[in-house]
Length: 360
Image (tube, rainbow, N blue to C red; front, top):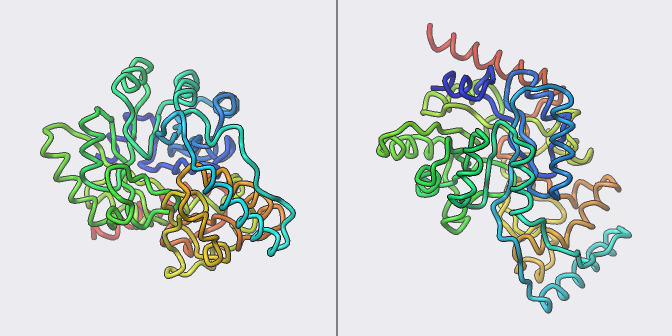
């Protein structure tokens, strides 16, 4: 199934670079896509015009297929302003203690409007649109169909995979507990959806087979080399989606301090964190995680995400990885800093070697 999936998308390899919001750039996307895999622009934090501008930059370099990833969110958010004030006070005190000049502020909006982002995605017309945090509406799916945009939904459980399949998604990305970054969970509490990828895959394969139609499954979470890709394929994956593996590529815009910390991340240091954004996410337990203000922990996404943005920007500028949201997957210590095109070639070489080794 892996090659038929790749052929359907017009790519050479059953490999997807994850749409990591805030950590992808047109340069990364084009490097991956031009190397024969599927590059993905993580646009969850981008305003509509920024989505269009970055899509134009990608198109200017070539016409290879690429994806745009969005977070499925309400257009409007209401916040408990008394709780916001208390969290701001504690976050400002933390920044002062850590010697950072930045302070929190109230944004004009807590996050871009999803409906406006979706309209920009449709205008940009990428080959693929991927979504996390929820299922898009039937009318939105029809709109993507009219533009011949392939739809990938993110699921962390079998029930969520079924929900996306029932909605008509072309493929489902299974986000195992090992995956870095924000959890895509939407039908359950995040803590109840921490299922290991290699347990989730065969369960989801059986569920998709029961539907009577082929729904390709994409494996995401903890895969760092070609052997992992082959293992996922053996369990029924049509492709593998890697995020952490690409974080140390020079084309990735992640903060330098974050990149430098990744090779030394121990497996037991990767944990589930809510204190940066208000939504469960997987990353390195660092100074901020240990010292996160109590008041901040109760604020929801994207309210807390907007409030901590000045802290994260100031920490990045100061080279303070210990105060950054250092999102990463369970096997982060296996990162291999190198240009994205070289990494794609290396992954596929490892994949072929592993396949030949098993065939002996």
